[in-house]
Amino acid sequence: LYGCGITDVSSLTQSLTNTKALQFLKELDLRDNMIGDSKQQLIDVLRDSNCKL
Image (cartoon, rainbow, N blue to C red; front, side, top):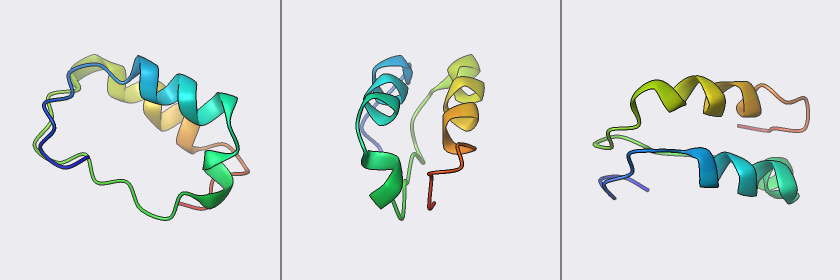
């Protein structure tokens, strides 16, 4: 997702928590995106024990 112009990660975090994606996610490149304050929401999701990132 490098340089995709993402400004809010709400949809991404919702998708990650509602699917089994966290079990298979090995890399997530969000460079060159302006996610701002919503990054904490993403960090909380990625701290899930099922996340292999």
